[in-house]
Image (cartoon, rainbow, N blue to C red):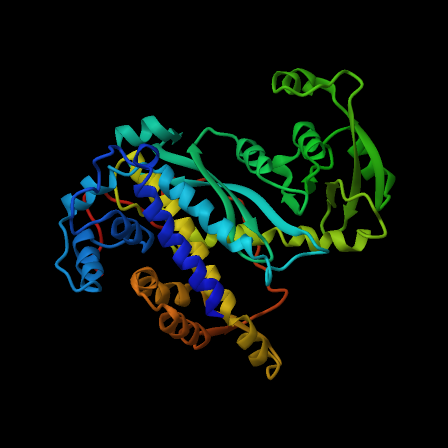
Length: 434
């Protein structure tokens, strides 16, 4: 159990040591963190990943108590964090994922392919002129709230957030999707909801030879309308390039008026007035029969639950700083924390499987409780020279808190007007003490 985990932990710590050797890439100045101080670069990064949501004075007291040292001040933390460029946390996250996938044994696949869901959401920020200038926001009759746009690529069968971006609020979700596609491979199957459907996206997947399943509306284009009206379950068809020719040429693609994309359309009845229509380049009906696509698209729900995790359980909208740099740092620090949690969670799979063999209704680990149990031990995993005992303790704690899995349970999804406040908020003049 611990071999791969400890190797990944060591790799994460090594990355920070190497970052000090590349100050021009990750630090504001080559002189940053060269003097011996209580708050070194690694201690600063471990602190931010440990998810500080309460008063910084209390969080710092508890954090440095684990080292057996007196804490630094809030001012010292603020000065130190703004000496670190936020791209360090972005690259630290990428490094973590590369360590996970360097040894793919134990990672789940579907027909030999990694399933990855791509989706976007928004984050509520807080009133500040620099924040509004950097990210923009949303307005209604009640006022204006700064917000950011977030995109995630989630490994649906393994739970890891493999790619992440945070951009200004007006950024299109397709911008994230195209950036994620560039880092995808022939071993990936990318799954999208209907917000991403478009000729450009389909063309780029085919050009890069990356598998995809993409939902579209029943009126997406003439070919889709004709397919829906026919009542057929699936067909192979071609989409013409139409107005996309100029856009693709500007991006360097060789296309002309005769360019088409050949795709497979699938009708999935879901018990509603309107069927789901899926577009895919999984063309072989023997290897990928119609019956498997409903299951595959349903896996996309894993990207929705990942947003629930980072927003509601890890409380990503409570930030530990009030500058744009802090927003970027905290965002990627939260993604790293979520991935670390997922890594430990998977170590309970075998024991959970044994437990469920004796139960008529299966159980799963309570995510909210287990995340709460992980937080005070998260930094210990980094600083302890022998983290195996902490990993074992966490595993036992996780298995002690399970809940019944109720298959088929559904709640009606009511449409509502977007509010101007998130469930968890950042206040510049207040932070809870407990």
